[in-house]
Image: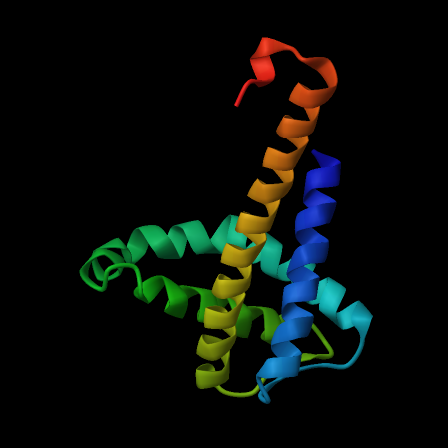
Length: 134
């Protein structure tokens, strides 16, 4: 479980770093501020985001999930307000950053699935056990 948390934390920090390269209004002073921002963003996503999702569920359904990007943008702005050295200048920058983070999450999910499939395939090939039949 700790390893999973660390992997997600580092992937989030990497995603934030990529966002700072792509979006001019998102800046980080150092790798430490990116790591701290990833940690704070993870805490906000675990605590505050579910409450916001519940409160805005009708809007999210009505917009076919697009309102969720605004919730993610709010999470990024909250993170920037708390973490020194991490800055999101405008709300539009936060929305663009949320879109990029969502796309990176999709790519990351596909990559993890590919890695897991490869591992399962490797287990089947090395053990021959029928449990690993694909």
